[in-house]
Length: 140
Image (cartoon, rainbow, N blue to C red; front, side, top):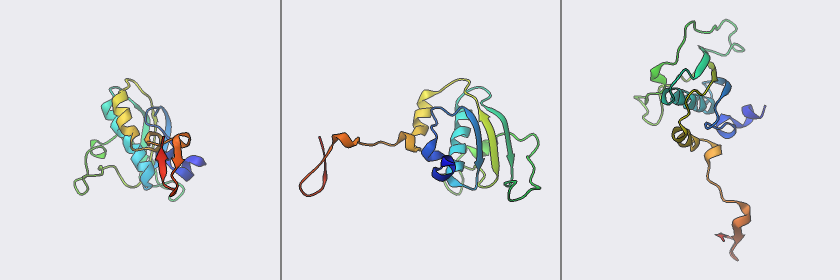
């Protein structure tokens, strides 16, 4: 699967998060996108996480791992990590599964999240580039 090879930060767009999500939180890219969904759930009113569930390990690795009954998004997952202010307190292991449903859309907040993904990367189109005699790139 392309999503598995490239990762959610390169394939998914936080402007349009609606749909089913399944993340292994031990994978940094998957954890980062799951964190974006958690931030959206806090920023946008309504019940955005439908059928959310969490278990400590991947069932493939541990067949006895069960979903935690009555699990809900912990606020600590979206708050800054006390040991690392550039990160959040989101779990760094386990499996998170949910369906994101937009109730009220905060486009400005989604645009801020977009900068953390490839979809929000700035680029220069090849058609507006030209090379100088020394090989450096000049913009038209």
